[in-house]
Amino acid sequence: MSIPLKPYKAEDIDLAHLSSFSEAKLGVKPFQFQLEIAAAILWGEDVIADIMTGGGKTLCLILPILLNEEDITIIIE
Image 1 (tube, rainbow, N blue to C red):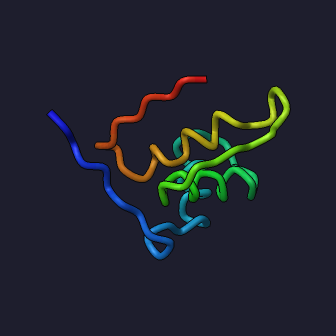
Image 2: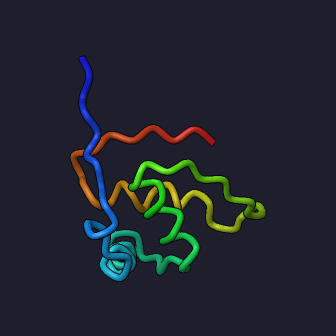
Image 3: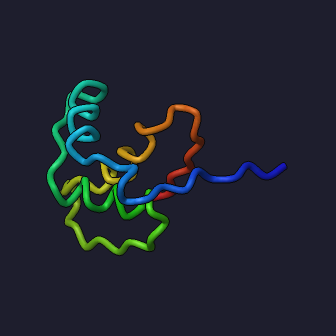
């Protein structure tokens, strides 16, 4: 069974809202680079991020999950 992914457009994503939602749900205020990477993921773009250990890569992957609680996401690091 295949479940179609919700397509997101630039106008569908409000980075300020995503940031405040992250603070409310996770207690973490994301940096701008994390919001930009999350937006690129939601747009379906490929992303390469060269970030040091402990630099916040995981939050980049978690932020898109916050927009739709019905989405299913698998993260392999």
